[in-house]
Every structure is written in C-alpha cells, then in structure tokens.
Length: 143
Image (tube, rainbow, N blue to C red; front, side, top):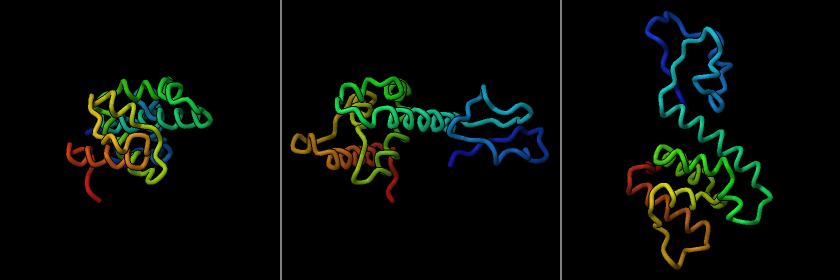
C-alpha cells in the first residue's frame, strides 16, 4: 500500500485523508489545505496504476500486439523506465495464469529478454521467466 509522509508541522493527520484516492493522486491535485507529501515511489505507483488501468480498459478488444503495445498509456509506462519495473513485475505476478502482455514493456525498459526460445509465445511461461528474472535482479521478493 502506498503511504504518504506528513509535514513536520502537523500535530494530527488531516480529517479527509481517508477520502484521498491514491490511484489518481499527484502533487498537483492534492486537496487544498492538506499538506501531505507522497514519496517518489508512491507517486510512481499511482502513475503506473492509472496508466495500466487505462491501457487494459482501452485495449481489451484489440487483437494486434502492435496496437496494444503502441497505446499511449503503455508507451508512458515504458517511458517511466526502471521506476516502472517493480510495479510491472508485481502486476505480472498478480495476474497468475492470465497475464497481460507486459513483455514488450519489460524488454524495452531492461534491454533484456530472459524468455527461453522454447517458451516464446507461451504467455504463462513467458511470465514465469520474467518473474524469475525479477527475483534474480532484486525486483521481486519471494512469497
């Protein structure tokens, strides 16, 4: 869960804190009067979630992988660079046996492709290969 940091000047947290939607929260739209700072990781997570939701909703009926990967939200995720890796891999892990096509983004960001030749085109095996790469690279924790 994404957590924020309160300003040192505060003696108590804001009353409306529970009403803050962390998926869409960015510094420019923090409610007025709420001195709530988000860590960079938290901002990255919120941005990733917002982009991933838009990408998945908009491309659900697409059949072309090129169209899916060229969607502006997907391209913005790639543009996040290595900051997106923990969230990409966490998302891939959470999708279990029905992973989305995060592989293009992972390869574009890392410059690597850990998927063995015999697993290419087999989505679940591709996901497992990337998750293993994530474990070995320190981006995915066991469990």
